[in-house]
Image (cartoon, rainbow over all chains, first blue to last red; front, side, top):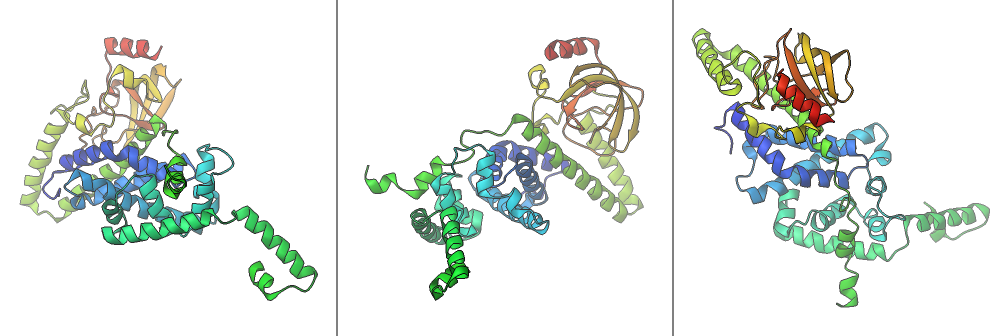
Amino acid sequence: MSDTLSGAGREELLASVFESAYAPIMAYARRRTAQLSDAEDVVAETFIVVWRRLDDLPEHEAERLPWLYGIARRVLANQRRGVARRGRLRDRIELVAASQALQTPSPLPAVLDAIGRLRETDQEILRLVAWEGLSHAEVGAALSISPNAAAIRLHRARGRLEREMRTPSVEAKGLRRIRTWLGWKGSASSAHEREEAR
Amino acid sequence: MSQQDRTDPLDELRSADPVHHSPAPSESKARVWARIQEVTMDDNRRTTRRRTAWAGLAAAAVAGVAVFALLLNNVGGSPTPSDGPGPGISSCVETYSLETLANRDFAFDGTVTTIDGDQVAFDVGESFAGDVTGSITLMASGMTGTSVTSAGGPNLAVGERYLVAGDETFVWACGFTQAYDEDVAADWAEAAR
């Protein structure tokens, strides 16, 4: 939309987008990173991408935020890959760690423990709806899928979250695995236990 | 409300929002914007260089006129430091005032000793905030003549005295850095108390 803008006009448009979207994008980043500095990295990189793609900026204000979430999501994924390459993925960026860094009540709420066990695509769609407050259409825009597909995925993810909340926590599963493993090492154990120990 | 409503996992997730009662610190926004501006200014410089390289002699002359016109529009046509935030105030993340001045990490009165690209060294006179003393080198993107910015800042010059405010290693434009003025300096000193 900004192909006719001059350099100064582009800067002013970016400043205006930044002013209106900084708070929600920063909140998005903080919910998904462990440290404030990581969140700042994500937000800065997101708006740098916006700067370079100003021509693609949706004309209607209502469509801009989902578009920005889509960019922030890819920036975050790149950041996670970079951190993973440095061998610090689980140290620095994880929902659980983010929650701890932000001093949410301890122990971790069961719902956060449960959502952390879902696959990333399920986690993201649930968070976009619950935390960013997006509609199906907006989730679709953020994830580059149709509103109908977003609704279906949300329905499935919600069901998985519900089931996950009824299952034992990671810690409990870990203890059970250790017990199973000890039993398997110490004496004859069933094939089922050996399978579970893996 | 039924039992099923009370245990809606999405509702539980909403109530467990980790940032709900924990807003980001206000200085975060300035830090992020400063980083974005670094990139936008670099991009503008590169674009200008690329265009210059492809332009012929005649086109270069036209471009020169255009750049001159742009400079006139953006820095008020004055090669000397400006007094205020300038015409591009809409690009400023925070509007200059004595209240917003208090949000900056540092504020001082200093004289420019050297300029190297966007790095500007100041000999600090009076420090109003941030306890800055002696000599300090700061990034003053858009204020050293290496790029054109709509963020409204003075063109810093060696030997000139300024009132300077910013965050971390960045000098802010938009009125937060301006030519030295005794009355304004007194206001800054008062605001910092």
